[in-house]
Every structure is written in C-alpha cells, then in structure tokens.
Image (cartoon, rainbow, N blue to C red):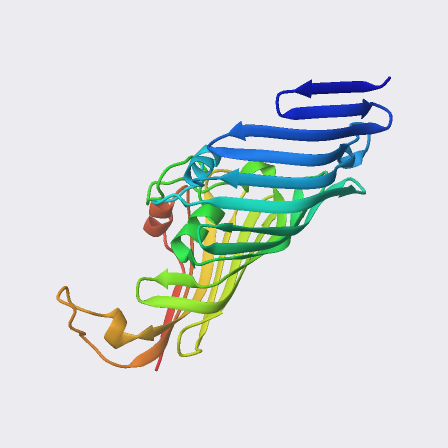
Length: 276
C-alpha cells in the first residue's frame, strides 16, 4: 500500500515492502539534522541510501547533550555532510566532510549491527587532555577531574577501532605535537589508546594507555615517551628557566581504581628513565 505523508519540512512517500523516499529534518540541541534518501524498514541497516547533514551554530549544545567530559566544551559552527549507505547489515558514512569552527573534519566511519565502529577521521587542532577524557572517563557532561569515574565501555555500547589524525595536538602548554595519529580501540572489557607524533624538533612522542576490567574498578597501565626542552618547560612563575638542555622522558606504570585520583593513590609498578 502506497503511503505519502507531508508534515511541515518532512516528507515520506513509498511502501513498507519496497521502501520509502524521505526528506527529513529535525531541530535538536542547537542544530538541524537532515536526511534525504531512501529508508527500507524491513532491510538490514534499514536500507539507508542517501545524504546526511548536520548544521549547528554552536557545537557546545550538542556536546553537552552527549555528555562529553570536557573542561571547555567544543564550541563554534559545526557543519557535517556525508553519504549514508547500508550494506550487509552495516551502516557506512564513507565521505564525511565538514568543519568545527575553523578546523576541517574529513574521514569515513562504518557501524555494524553489533555496534562495532571502524574508521578514520582527520580533524583540526586537539588537546591531549580532551582526548584522554573522552576515551577513558564517563560521559556525564562534567568537567574532568581526579574524582571523575572511569568508564567501563565506550558511550552507547560501541566497540571497534577508530583512528584520529589531528592537525596538531597540545600535549601540554609548552609542547605542541605534529604528525599525530591516535588510535582508540574498544573491546568488551578493555579500552586502549595509542598515540604517536613528533615534537617541533622531530623527536618521537609515544603514548600507550589501557583501561581494562569487568566492573567499575579499572586496571590502568601505560607507557609514555615524551621529549623535554628544559628551558621552555621548566620555568619559575616569572618565566625564568630553571634548567637548560634536552632529553627524552620515558615512563611506565600500572595501577587500578574507579577514578584518576584512585588510580594515582594505588600506583604500583613504576618505571622512569631520562635520556639526554
């Protein structure tokens, strides 16, 4: 039976057996969400085949609604477009293109029926503190802190592997890394982050962090190699350097806890080395 519905800015026409042509718009959380294409409710992945778009004058409202843990929610104009296709039960976004503020966003993502997500995304500048908070802390919409709870799984029950390539990464105030690749992998009982990049002198930056466990108490382990420029990274309050020289700081640790503060209080095996 043929069905046609026109309601304000939304239009649906078709049959349940063969699918519907749709033109849908929804306003929520400070943004407009648009889909134009086909939907086949009886097919795997709902038979999606069309174009998806997101327009928002301020991304902070959407980030707050998602519960992103950040001391300063990402703000600015958010524009995203992508083709959407469904095949073999998976939904693919093969040509994501857009921007957040002045930062370009491109890449591709795929989501299968088991909520396993894979893909790669290129972004504008990011801060390591925000990446770590999003990857390891509960999405409750709170600013991250020592009492923030570690999450036991990625938001929305997602698993899989996503690689992020930011234009630059602020490791801390005095160290901006380039040539950065960040891999976030999630399985049923483990979240893992791997990061590689270069400092301005082309020295390697390497970070590996793992949160594992079946419950709220997480086993945390990590290894880091961070280049250090003593004159710029060790200064008095007035700005005068307290030391000079260059080197590599290598750290390794294991711990456990429900929060970063709890993990710090129970630090177990630790390794540290300084290489000039």
